[in-house]
Length: 246
Image 1 (cartoon, rainbow, N blue to C red):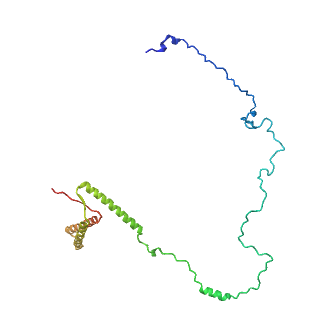
Image 2 (cartoon, helix red, strand yellow):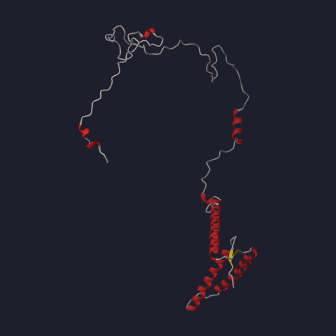
Image 3 (cartoon, one colour):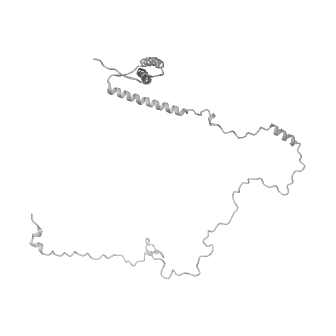
């Protein structure tokens, strides 16, 4: 590749080119024209740029701030167009003569006695209310019962949903138990619980042998399991998984 720096002509200094200078601009308008003579001209204002002219800022002893010269000038007072209404009755004039010689036939002693006899006795201060005598003392408020029932219902719905999902994942043949069948199972479980409870009540108080301890533990486990089964069947929806036999 050819390089210009290796040429002999590169050793010669370049020729200096002097740019052509255009002629100086000359305006066709005279700059000494007074701007006041034009419609678009604006007369020069005093103190507009560098303050007053030299010698004009000298203080004048005859012009100074006098007393009350800065206060606003108020108009002359006039009669109000609307007067303020009078609240109290006017005082009687000095020429007004009161009515004299008025006598009442009322017996103030008898009237005072009758008024005091017929007067109702004044009520004293009410005694403080004992909080233990209130109707709702030591009772669970209704709103707490409502909230508790709502929470239990939500728990039952969630538990039912988990049970359904678990049954669907583990078993393919899942059906909802009919209400008649569910009520029949609950009745049978209650009867069985009664029989087991009677046997549990007949046990002796002394557990001196291992057989008695084992029998007592078996009765207690059966009672707990039966109660748990009754609680499960008491739900609104009970799912049953049916096993397939081949």
